[in-house]
Length: 593
Image (cartoon, helix red, strand yellow):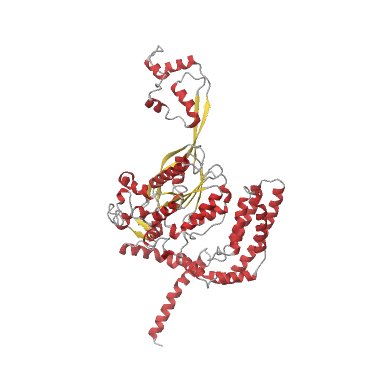
């Protein structure tokens, strides 16, 4: 063979083995597991260790369930008795649902459905004790399924979830791409070079052509340019409308109304920042400067839901209209992030609260009277955009931290306290001392303090009672302020503030959401997201379940596992970003409650 070809083959072999060799050396020198040997381990070791752990887990579940049944029969609190059972079932699920290092049990598998059914029934027992018999039989079935060591099941797992399956290889390849030592060393500098030469921020990011060169998440853009999820060309996708209608019917059967909130993606509100087109021309010639835009897929599907009789919130129109104040108040979305600014979140909260009030006034839903007093205070937070993080360029300080001003919501607690009574004469003497040089009770200064406002002077009364608490305590406060010496007692108001928090027991409103519900709510500045501001607008407690990137199916699965949280709820607000109509994690599967 020609020496030249031998050299080429040797060079090719070296290049082929280089990533594996570098990773092997890095793994042996470090504390990480040896990723390169995962394939071998998942064939000869993992399946049998999994079987052993499942058997042990099923036995623990059986023991915990027997003890719980005895405790409940003896009069123990159901929730306390079930806590060890729920923990044992959770441990068994963690083992059973993870087939190997790179594959999880398919949701269509009978074992998966059995575990989830047991999970749901256990969660319902505290509020629905009539499910006890069904829970008992289901848990016995779980123990029967997983309580014995099965070589056949281990081999089947290797066959259907092992290295010869596409899902395993894709996950393994992704792991190597993300964690390979050679890739981690070379990729950032390669990305920086591509950015410096071509202004290319990476495969997940689109660099806007408009003013300020904003960053856009590629999926947000692809959602707008690909066919609608309802188009015949998208027939392979789950139908989101059918899933939403099914969810509406499931909630209605439990006495809960559904309100759907589709959050616009950044390019739907700021197309000119993406394309560089005139703000007035917008997309396809639409005049978006006046709040009108070309009908995108998100708005079209939202309108379709409304025509089908669902309660919906249109955030597109008010957000587009609010852009007119951007120069004065700042943008509605962050420049290097997929999400809205605190201003956008607060605007959304107000619009959603307005829709809920409409539903209440129309008699559609009864959420009770306002019962909470909330206040907001300014707070500054630094935010590194998630799109900038996706690009991998933040480690080189290519994109800067953006400072935002949020308004943190706190619950205000006002306690009315009656002080020691003062006689009428002592009160007047005290007021006289506050007027230097006054010796008669007809002195103008004294009269102004004894009767600070005329009842008909609305402006004066409003200023005098501005700090009075709302609700039943207002009347007492009003009387003391207007007639300081005529009451038998003096009223005091002790005011304290506590951080906003979900209240699953008292709330009649439950919110399901994605990262648009999480931003500013559980990350900095905390309690400044749309959920807290919605509660402030409504004057009522709320509860929330949030799943980043999983508001299409995953958040409903979370709810199904905690079905008891629907107790006492009258309204469920379901918020998800428009791109999830096509790209939602796990699609739009039907979830059984």
